[in-house]
Image 1: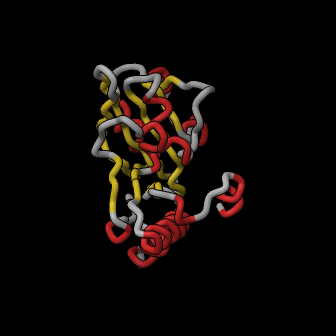
Image 2: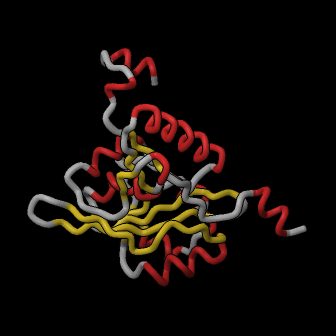
Length: 194
């Protein structure tokens, strides 16, 4: 990060806002990212723009498609998934969450997807290729993929939020930023199963 700032002739106090994804994702990755951003926001009294990682991943696809389904591996035979929709007005886009990020077991995924998705929809995320063999052919027929779209939640995707209106991204004080965990950690699962 310091090298990037140096390349642009900037220093930490020059930044007016921080952006961070709150999850779902790697428990350690989420904790490290949030701790760093909250520390910097506290140190320089800056706001933090937060959103979930699946919406962040969906944003580029929502520029082309009205509805986008996201799916990422949650490990241990689980998929993180969520469904988002764009509504466009004159010069502004509004984004809605049709169903919030959740972790679903692979056997239950097909029923959830088929129940919620009735027509062809754009799908992004590494979960598509990882669980392709587990998906029913009828489910696959509804899933439209684009090679132009990334299967990762990229930091640059925060730019799509400029000029948009949504409750899915929030400007927060550092103390209000919290992780989005939609499943128990491996340690919590082990304790529960004892």
